[in-house]
Length: 105
Image 1 (cartoon, rainbow, N blue to C red):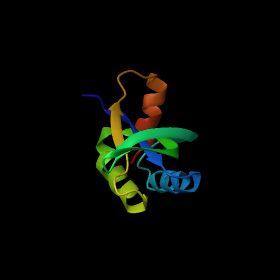
Image 2: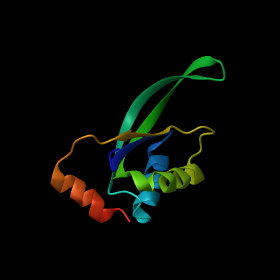
Image 3: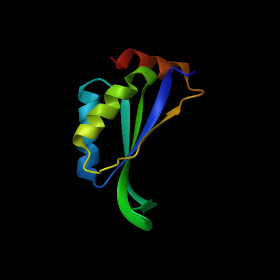
Image 4: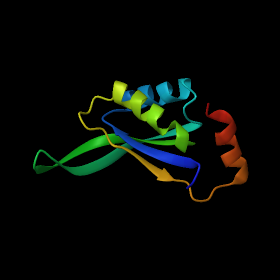
C-alpha cells in the first residue's frame, strides 16, 4: 500500500471550498490543497439526474491523515452526502513526497 494519497472533494461554492481548505491546512492534516472552480458535475440524486456548478478540492496528504480530514470536512460541508474519495499516489517525485511527509502532522 502507498503511504500518500490524494483526496477529492467537491463543494457547492468557492467560499465553502476555501473554508474546507483552510481547515485542513490549519490542522496540518495535509500538505497542499488545490481548488479548481467552475466544475460542472452531473449525478444521480434522489432517483433522478441532477447537475451543479461546483469547486473541486484536490488534497495531498498521508494515508494516515484520511480519517481526520474526513471528519473535518463533514463538520464543515453543507451537502448531506459530500464527495470525499481518496486515491493512492502510486509514483511521485521523491522531493515532493518528502515534503508531504515532513508537512503533515
